[in-house]
Image (cartoon, rainbow, N blue to C red):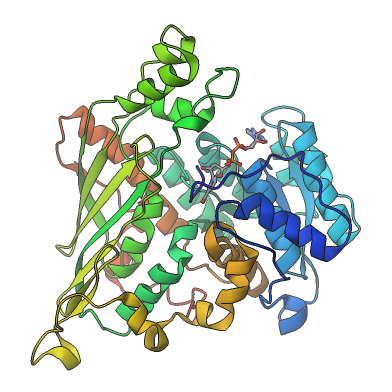
Length: 462
Ligand SMILES: NC(=O)c1ccc[n+]([C@@H]2O[C@H](COP(=O)([O-])OP(=O)(O)OC[C@H]3O[C@@H](n4cnc5c(N)ncnc54)[C@H](O)[C@@H]3O)[C@@H](O)[C@H]2O)c1
C-alpha cells in the first residue's frame, strides 16, 4: 500500500551515474503526485559526520519493489555511513536494478538472492549483513523479521507488519532472545503535523490525552489486479481476509499520543464493517461484467471501523478502507483534558494558559508551528520534503532506522509497538467473526507497560 497514493515506478527504472541525477531519479520515483521539482542530498547526520560510527553499517534489503527500492535510495542518498551489501527479490530484474543503485552510489556490488521465496534466508545468514530491511508483501513481513532475528541480525519491516498473534509473539520472543533491534517502519508517525502534535502532547498542551481517532482511507482498487486481470497481493488481502488489515497509518500516532506501551496498553477492540461493494464495481468497470476479476468475492467491506479500549480507560477509533470512492484521506483527532486537535478543523485549547476562557473556536494548527514544530522538522524539514517519499515522512523514518543501527539503541517504534499495533489486524477479524463483540488484545510487554519509563533507553526523538 502506498502511504499516499503515489505512483511509484517499478524496479526497471535506471538512474544515471552522477549523484544529483541519482537523487532526482529517486524523487521522481516516489514524489510523483507531490509536485516535487527536484531534490538535493539530505542532511541527515551520518556516522561519518557525527563521529558515532567508524565502520559502515551494512544492510541487506529483502523485497525491492517500488517500496524497497525507495528505501535503498533513501539509505544511499542520506546516510553516507550506510551501505547495502545484499538484496533479495523474486524478480531478478528488480534485484539487479537495486544493485545498480548501490554500484553507482557506493562503487560496490551487493550480492543478490533471487532463487525463490526462501532464498532471503541466505541473505540473512551473511556475515556482511548487520541489519535486514524488509519490504515484501504483507504476509511475509512477520516471518522474515523472525528469520532475520534468528540469524542474529537487526531487522526493520514495512507496514502492515506481522499478520498473526503467533508471528507477533515470535518477533517479541526472538528479539528478546537475540538482543537485536527491531524497528517497525510506520512512516506516518513522522508526518510534520503528527510529529508536531506528538511534541505538543509531550509538552502537556492538551493535558491528559484520553481519546484519539486515526484513519487510512486510500482507494487502492487499481492495484488489486494487474493489467492482465491477475490478482495482486493487495487484491488478495481484500479478498481473503477482513477487518482492519492495514491499520497502522491511522493507529501509530494515536498510540504514541496515548502512551501505549509507556503507561497504558491496547486492551480490547470491537470492529464493525459495511458489506463489500466497491471493489467488485471497480473490477467490473475496468475488466467487464463477465470478466474474471468481476467475479472475485471480496471479503473486506468498504468501510471498517475499530474501537479500541485501553487499560487506563482511554479510547481509540480507527477507520480503514482501500476501496472508498474518495480522494486519499488520513484524518486524525486527539482529545485531551485541556484541548483538542482535529486535523479537519484545527486546534482548540481550553486549559493551561487558556483556563480562564477557551479560545474562540478552532485555530489553525499552523498558528502553533513556531512554538511547537517538532525538532526533526525544525532541523531539516525542507530537505525532507524536497527529498520526498510521502512528503518527507520516509526521510525521517529511514533516518531513525539508520540511527538505531548507528547508535545501537532501541528505536522509537520498537518490536512492542510493532506487535501491539499489528494485533488489531487479527483482533478486528475475530471481533467481526463474533458479530462485533469485544475481543481482548494481547499484552506483548508482559506487564511492563505499567512502568511508563521501562523503555527510557530508546533513541529520543526530541
Ligand atoms: N509505509 C508505506 O507508506 C508503504 C508504501 C508502500 C508500500 N508499503 C509496504 O511495503 C511493502 C512492499 O510494497 P510494494 O509496493 O513495493 O510491493 P510490491 O509487491 O510491488 O513489491 C514487493 C517485492 O517483494 C518481492 N518479494 C515477494 N516475496 C518475496 C520473497 N519471499 N523473497 C524476496 N522477495 C519477495 C516481490 O518480488 C516484489 O518485488 C508492502 O508490505 C507494503 O505494504 C508501505
